[in-house]
Length: 397
Image 1: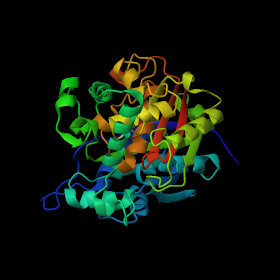
Image 2: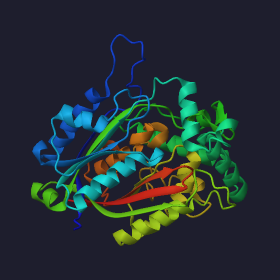
Image 3: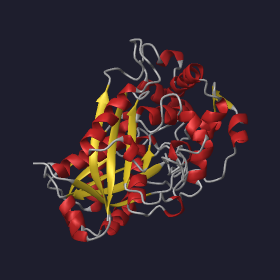
Image 4: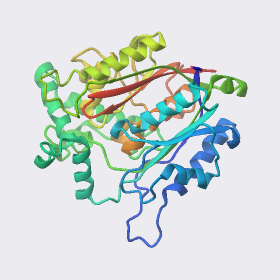
């Protein structure tokens, strides 16, 4: 049994520093942030909680003390379930996988309504602990980790290679950060909402050459809840919704960085996943009105936009500088402000991607609204885009 699936409600917290230090007299508790968002999302959806049949959580970061968080939250919300309850984990793809599994629960008839949700708390974790955890998660512990090889270092190598191969400039890459901050200034949940100039990006302290402070992701906290349902449920409400039109996934069989020589900046997994998603939706990249990409660094947005066919190969940075990927441009990318300015609470970033698309396609995006937005694509990644998960959503009035 397969059914068409829609998103009819959503809510998200502001992104930033929500977590409290371990020695603070009052503690911020994850369930006390997430539960009100569930209530808000359900109110927007106009669906009673008795109709929720499945809960799919993005697994919490290791810094969350409460384990088995999914069943803890089901108890806290007083939600008996006939479909399923689970927590999923896939590094940067975690939020997207939670959404994917919620879609499956509905499409397969296990539930008429499902919630895809999660909370990411990490801002108060010790920097050394956080760095070590990240390196052990994203690199080979017998090779990468012992040399202190971080994900930002991979992306920096991408940037150097891209600049070498295509003659892109630092200013062109930096323009992505400027553009995303301009979008974030219009987003009430964004972590950073102060305008950023090109000069500020170029003169910022270096993190990993050639990427500077404003071209790499901040640490932060955030929470999201999406209400997913069968299309007949959405139709019965008589209000706009976002329909899931297509989905594509590809993993190239490597762990983060391949030990087999390849074109490291082609992001071939993203290209193959996008091709599958476009095929399922019956569209091409030229039909999209906007895209929300998982892009922790400026270079990642450039390379992902090229892999998804949104910009020509070798021209992504130049088109960003020319305004083609800005609001009002040919194909607005990361209208939320993206990982760089909206914020990057890693395990729920994939959910934030779908949240932004839902806001745009139901015309709730306010000042950053893409005019007449009808089709949007969202991506999330694992590693240096050695795996990608792409969803295509359509506006239905």
